[in-house]
Image 1: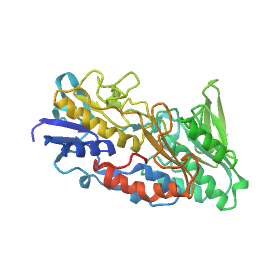
Image 2 (image 1 turned 30 degrees about the vertical axis):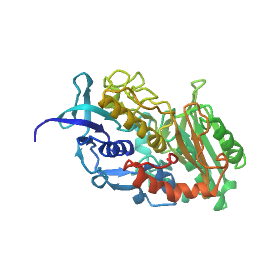
Image 3 (image 1 turned 90 degrees about the vertical axis):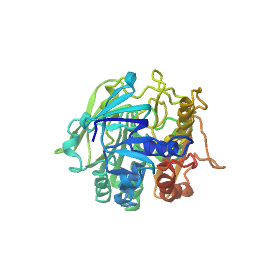
Image 4 (image 1 turned 120 degrees about the horizontal axis):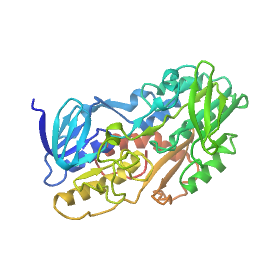
Length: 404
């Protein structure tokens, strides 16, 4: 096999963003040569992990073979991108392939930086430490919740950006509800250490969460605090006050840890990155600000919106239209308004569906106030959104924008 390859369009990443945009482009007129670079042989529907951690579904429901999701007509290069040479319209891979392109779509997602919290990698899955943020660890969350007998139940939110910024509190609300149903809530202290100054970025939904959930249910929230160390043997968590820089020790009986996240290292180290390490694209057109034949979508992009599957769904038609316009030598055709969505699970059978744009203003789909907890929206999360994901988003079909 030759180490030198060329394709009209190369998509880096086989997540929801990469698969979906590849499928859309292959259905477009005149596009016949699309390659997807993706090393994994499995694809995970990560939004389901909240419900896995809450004991609602089995983790096996969240995974499918990658081979069955590669769109018809695409060439799957089972390898990992390593270095970009955008001035030469090519990249190299981990295994030494040299791949040229006419157009490049960068969609590798983000990386989980477990190592940035001292003691966390060694403690995961042991000594009361759990996390929903990987397939290998998500079962430990339910084990901790269902075996909890009282004491300090601690939940964390790291400095953003992270994928689905509502997820760290969703599992806390499920855990708190479970403790209440088990009759041990009065023996439990539920504590949320949040690195941001508010519980949610969009003001409407932040107010709803505090007034309808946090205060009535006696959840203790500490803003602008970040987890910096786990001491598993002694069941202690070390937090830093982001205003003062001071650290303190919080004993725990169980702790759900959300690890720091960042752009993949191979993106950070590339000419495609901005100063923060994300692929440097126009927030309206998704086109690179320096390389007009390069586009980016999803979590690895510099788009200043929440990193969710729903955001990808809203970004995909914009990227498709503007990339096809670029191929035809035309200016961008449309723009992205920053739409994103976060189905905020607030308990078993309860959900607030947040939908908003770059300005954090609500962009609600349904003809009622989505800032209220609803059973119907929980059913949407539980039953409808997985179908939309597997049959719509990753296949590049047009579906409603909501859902993550």
